Amino acid sequence: MDLYRTIKEKAEGTYSEKRSKFLAFAIPVSTVDEVKTLVAEYQKKYYDARHVCYAYMLGAERKEFRANDNGEPSGTAGKPILGQINSNELTNILIIVVRYFGGIKLGTSGLIVAYRLAAAEAIAAAEIIEKTVDEDVKVKFEYPMMNEVMKVVKDMEPQIVSQDFDMDCRMTLRIRKGEAERMKEKLKKIETLIIED
Image 1 (cartoon, one colour):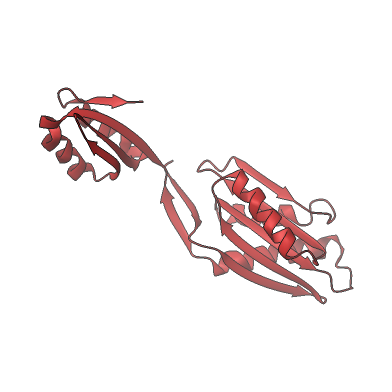
Image 2 (image 1 turned 180 degrees about the horizontal axis):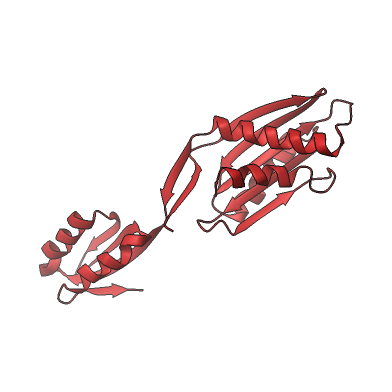
């Protein structure tokens, strides 16, 4: 699996229920540190809100995730938000839902529905994109082999992340994980070329 679904950029959604207002923000993220920073920012920005709940999913395998109810009854906020991330098969995403209490209690089932629908609104407003899981291949070769290396590059179309043509030539090529082995095989056929770890 070297493809995953995520969102292109931040998107927002809102949902109201019995005068409670739910503001939802879907944000593309790639690390837990990013998540922590963003959650702290939103808690500061919406300091007057009753709850700032969230859920996130990270990694192409979608194995790293967390849901947080931020003081709402257990399982009524973070889980339904995470449920929306799951049902849309998204990853590298953080959804924060800010709740302003309207004075009327919604009850457990009401909360679950409200958080789920607020998260769904934010996802609906987002542009969902597919991304590839890439691998970097670092190569070192002698200058006379440049044409052969460039032939492989032209053929396989990796992204050239860096190149340095000094005494020895070095390149870092980024390619979709599923194609990396095939590219390495082609590169290995070039005399004096070394694939570095």
